[in-house]
Image 1 (cartoon, rainbow, N blue to C red):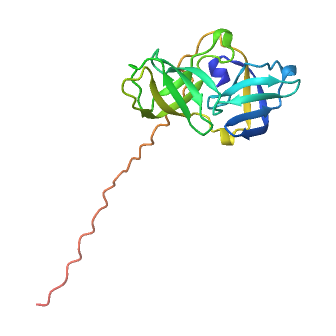
Image 2: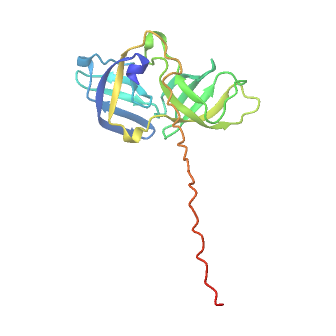
Image 3: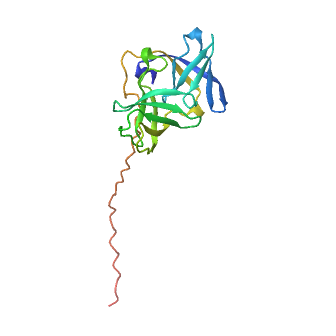
Amino acid sequence: LAANGGYRVVPAQIISMSQSGFSRTIGIDAGTNYGVKPDMTVISAGGLIGRVVSAASNSATVLIITDESFKVGVRLAGTQALGVISGRGSGVLDLELLDAQTEVRIGDELVARGSVGGKPFVPGVPVGQVISVVQTPGALTRIAVVKPFVNLATLDIVAVVLSPPKIDPRDSLLPRPIPTPTVTVTVTAQPTASPTPIPTKS
């Protein structure tokens, strides 16, 4: 993901996890000695993990995307529609699209729209996919529920983005659908043996 997006990163291993109430953070083994500073984007192979909130010389604390206080500006893939993702302290996220007229469907994908100077978020990082849409007639915004692309329960190695890409990768980093294999069955005709004639008595 880092190479394809043009992100300059430093890899780090998760060394701790903290879940207190709705708070969700992880500790990593890279800090200021490696260039890691607060308000840097943290990614994995699947997409956005969170942002650095504090850093020591050889470690840092990352607020992860499911934390209830987490927010990130996003863009609906393939469009210019903007919204905000919020953590809810569980395995899914809340999406608030800023324009109530924006059409959003189950299966729509979201990417980080990026911050000024790339902090705290660099552009183009995959965030998640819409799994349900909340109908709110007359509301000024559209609401949906999003499943993150990353599986936070199985994380081991992450990467801290030290600098944003020179060119916004737009939607190019979204996961590609796995093609369904086509099964071909070949039917071969088998020769049928002629029945042996039964001799008759004269």
